[in-house]
Image (cartoon, rainbow, N blue to C red):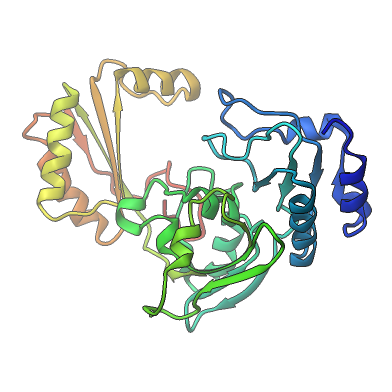
Length: 324
């Protein structure tokens, strides 16, 4: 439809005046996420609800008028999942950003989708708890966006991905109905696991308007190991040896020559340009002992150098308890 007047009139009937935006300069900035290589269409309107009822009104209106809806979080994703399609309603959930409950006994948080990961981590830190999924954009990305994309994080091997921390969801369906799934308890084994079905569905099954997420005790501060290898094969063999020996580093990052040079060019970190492969590992359970053991396993390659530090890495994420 080329004339969106009926759509705008219907939306404005149930939304605050400033929640309906058609200014092309504003809507253009919301057309796409961080994946600049993905196509993005021209939306009919951008809306900013701040209650569940307003989301229900938007979805009912869209269904009745047969207008596509694209839900959005902070648009930090790299898949194009938040990109507009022509004539759509861009449904931004950033104003639904309240932490509704923090329960340190049951170790859960009840949040709206626009809550930023970093804000939840800071709030949970008061109870020495953390929300452990850690996408690299954790300081700006939202819980709702993490749920929509099923995001992982740098430390997912040890601490798990988003799906493992989402216990329950409130979801507005296409016809405006509110669906509640899951639980608020550590144990929940009855019925279909609709929560897992919705995590990673990227808004195709409904719009997440609330979530119950699990919190865990904050890990201790981490140390880092950096090992330089003469080849990528030698670095991969070291990774296999570390895992086979029973270690579970919270992070193991492998960088080849091209990556090392690109990082040096961008951040001037002074990494050795001559290396064929650089392996960086973090650990936090017994970091000194575990990283020393991992360092020994890195040597037979043999790497040109292997250096476990004696203090928390300065490149560690600046989170409340210095974990990454």
